[in-house]
Image 1 (cartoon, helix red, strand yellow):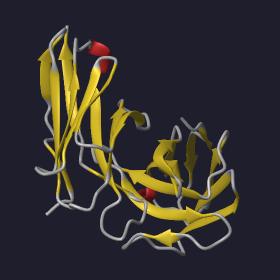
Image 2 (cartoon, each protein chain N blue to C red; image 1 turned 30 degrees about the horizontal axis):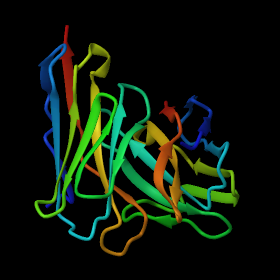
Image 3 (cartoon, one colour; image 1 turned 180 degrees about the horizontal axis):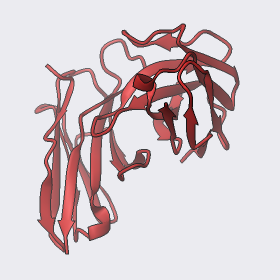
Image 4 (cartoon, each protein chain N blue to C red; image 1 turned 180 degrees about the vertical axis):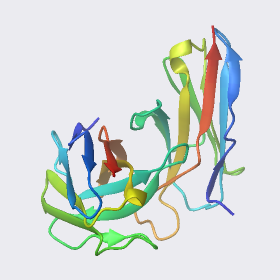
Length: 113
Length: 115
């Protein structure tokens, strides 16, 4: 069983719609979660981090964490074609607390004009 | 967030040669850096954790004698791919983080092509 799982997609949404990206994790000891965006041929860039249950908003992005369900999500409001990328979910602070990030396989988002 | 640079951004080399990739933390003293490799259409694979002033910790299946890591200062870690072969062609990315800094910030990556 993978420690962090994402649907690889592609997830296709029309411009202006809300894109919902989901992630589940298996290690209940994980404390920190991160969403990274990766454009083709580029390295990942941090979008948001979340540590507590509930929602965290930053501009058009909202991260949601539910530790009881071991579920993390990222909502992108008013999706733009420039949001088309692969979104990586990562967890940290689980068993052994090594400081390593555990990445999901990423979800490809396509925003169609 | 932290600013991380990598050099070179792209390198093409012949099979059997060694290639050194530098990762610099420009505005943050990084006691820990991480090295990842990414093959096309795959997710990031952690290769090793680089610790300033001590030996790197390699992930299972990563050959420490082939991928030499040196973290001699708080701002510089290097990855040397020794005796490179075509199957080593990949996108190599470093990140800073660990310790009291919870978030990892990635460098721009180095694309290695071994002919």
